Amino acid sequence: MQEEPLYPFSGQGDHAILKVRKKDLSTLEMLSLLAGVSGAKIKEFGYAGLKDKQAMSIQYLSLPKRYACILEKHASTLLDRGVKILDITAHNHKIRLGHLKGNFFSMRLKKLSPLDAKKIEQILPFLKTYGFPNYFGLQRFGKSGDNFKQPATRSKKLQAFFLSSYQSHLFNHWLSMRMHLNTLLRHFNPKEIQATFNFLSLEQLKSLGDQEHYFKLLPGDILCHYPFGKYFTHCDLANSKRLLTKQIVPTGLLTGQKVPHAQELAHVLEQPYIHTLKARGDRRFALVFPDALEFVYLPKEAQAQLCFFLPKGTYATIFLEEVAGQTLFEA
Image 1 (tube, rainbow, N blue to C red):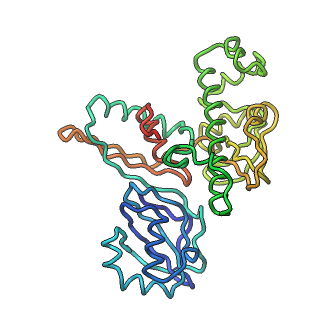
Image 2 (cartoon, rainbow, N blue to C red):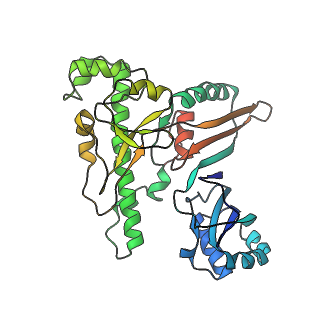
Image 3 (cartoon, rainbow, N blue to C red):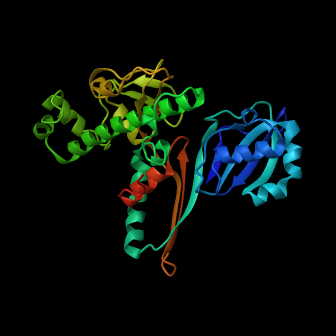
């Protein structure tokens, strides 16, 4: 996995920018190691995102310049602990959480039969064209998959983390419900669907079913320009065409304060997931589109190399489950 920065670094400024490769360490474990070696406080480091412990990852860190030379002197110690400094430059401000475009992934798929390889070759163009549901991955919710159930704690950081996890939990349930509606619209007639979604009229269900994309836009959905842009309310039938060309995507609620809510029909489906939390709310893409897709199958080795790029906040584990068409990761 390799991080793609949100902006180029200037090469000048008071903050050293470290391009580092880590192995068998989470980002927070790596920061603890670097802080211990350099004498810097963990809060002085900046990073754009947390990387999985299981993957070999390349990401960018910032810290005050005076500590960079100390880390360089202890490069061999760091390497023994699983961290290699690949490059050092500078910038005029600290790297903030979320300051990345996304991540490039490269992985080897082993024990892959020719039939399974063929299935993957067939599904990848569909996922690139139509995208996949942007669920939070299982690792978001801890080893037991339920860290959002933890009782209140005096630690502000832990409490904020648990609240964020609960927001993610509610988002996943909302997205699952929307995908259920999308599935019904593909396989059943409006009268049959009304048994589950009785607030939708036959005319409305027919209109939704006529949309070409599998993710049906509801009146009042909050949309966003893709991959970056402003939120706006869906009220134009042409938006379903714009979704097909990846110009816009629907968004789901991360419930909390100071966040726009869906309107009209979309609000009816969002309402059960609106909770009063002492946390800032946000919206999250309901769909994302993988890019830079490469798949090379080696039949003699029964292996394949799969490469792809995902926007920030998207879980590679979710993409792999879409590729496989089955659940691969469980608590």
